[in-house]
Length: 528
Image 1 (cartoon, one colour):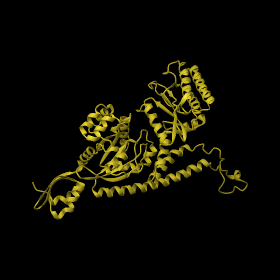
Image 2 (image 1 turned 135 degrees about the vertical axis):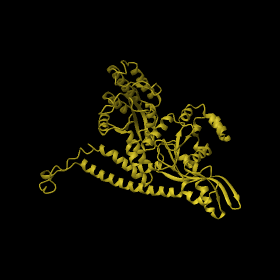
Image 3 (image 1 turned 180 degrees about the vertical axis):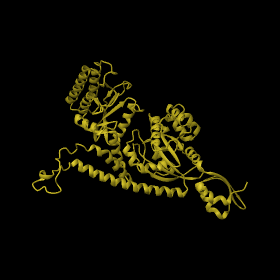
Image 4 (image 1 turned 90 degrees about the horizontal axis):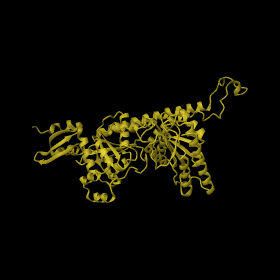
């Protein structure tokens, strides 16, 4: 973008601001003021020249325009009533992200709204490499400053993690609060943490994130004086350079981090004991995993048969793991754990702090991966979940994939008929015309389509879980005497009884026996 174009753009923004000021309105995104703003931006775009490939500047576009160009800036006005007004900034560095920048910004907008920020503008830029001091170039900083002032923005939200230096420089240049993606996610976690366990883990993550960002927060305070500078009677113990308030705060935060890590280690030990007790019970364990807001908690409630976990259409509605008992098709029982959802660029501080929680996933017998079919980035979300599982050391875990929210991609009239009939084959046929379903089944051939909110497809899902959990069972034909009724009950609860007949000498069964019960049933094996 040339200097002439940049100048025209500033004039367009200024004229739009003046038009709104004349009407006594500041960026409400409705009526004539929004049209004036858009028209002014169009006029500035008409003056564009130069090759965008060689030009690090951004050009102003509308959200409906094609975002495939190398570098774009999109300011989108909306009619919102937020507690804070936010401007989103996405920076796409060549070769660094598999997600389209528009989809990533959409997700940042959802995160912002979950945190109570109303999004009034969006800005995107594609760069070959980040600017070390401000992430975006100086020209872009000036444009963001103009846009933030024009839209009466309270906070500027970046869709990448900013270094402490970048954050300080941007706040100084924009004269606005600057928050990066990591801080935003941590803020949401802090809002949603309800149990002591969750609060401890979130606080640890927040402190580890904030510690390197304390620099210059206390530059207005003088160094604690030592020697003569501390007063006429400085005396022994107070000589020397002293220390800044910053150093004191860092030491205090370091102590708090050490304390929290000790508390979380205690929490990990308690969770290990709980898992051992569950393992001794003989019940297999299923761990729900998936992208945030895929419907894991809703599915858990549906499988259990009662709504005991908070479920809402928002990001990270559930943080604390909850384990409950479910019944499978064969009559066998299992334990299902609902865990925290994943997200792209999951902050490393959260992964480390929530290690005690994520161990529930690592120790499970089978993972139940929930995918939101209605989301435009469903494939990207599924790949993100697999990547996070790989980071946890789970490269190819036993897994059942449940494709949720199918009601949102099937035509309303067709869906009403499917709800009444409950025909699984017809359900698959109705999804054949959905491109994302075809892509998901190419990746997961045995995926089970469900609508957790309405309980559709749950029988097929229980069958799939039943089959997946048979992997560790040992087939056996047994004759259980009637006096050993308690053992028969345990086989029904913890194993799978395929056939059962009553004879004079007892109950003859063909069963799949869990390994820990093999010793108990050995005396009752039928000799072939």
